[in-house]
Image (cartoon, rainbow, N blue to C red; front, side, top):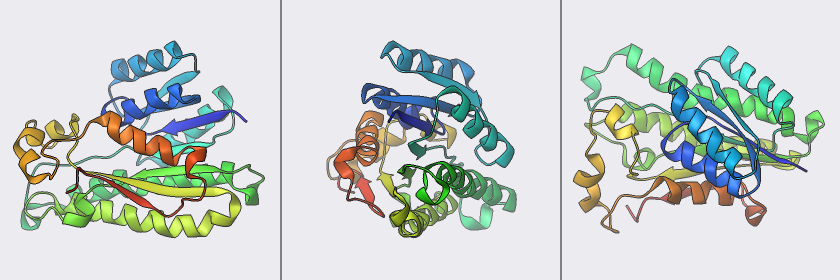
Length: 248
């Protein structure tokens, strides 16, 4: 059976590293991206250079219509999905709860939670034995913030990632008998562009003293954990949330 992955937010950071590593591991990859077409096209070229098929499609993860287009394009261009990586996510600038707007919360949950649920629903329709599928894997991206709370910084982001932890556990139990494994990776402080989007481009350097390993992680290190959960080396693992935080 061909190995076919959809990865949301696949044009940069952890998503791009995961897409490229997936190609090395024999996956064809559908790369979703929000705005940076040049970066997404570069990832696609990198995948193709490794001998795998790939395409990129722009879409808002929080938009049901956009995600339906993504899954339909994957069906037509690559074939039957075997792995979904719910990687896309947003963070906002540091703020206390009493400084935050409802619009900020709605964006945070629409992308980080509802988007993952939309994609998981569509994946299940294709993977589940209940729907005639042959099984597959779903890997969600959580965050160490779900355990730490991120008070005084972005408690809304931490809360959304806490929801991802709960969603992972519940969905894993829901579809375990249908050939689908659902797990998550909980990264710590990772050297990616997301910190700049939250107004802290130097966050890794400033925060490494809080990490027992005394350094930030790399996108490739998180991709390694994701690909393990997507592989046949983890066939008895479901409902797990793997910390990849340098001990934090």
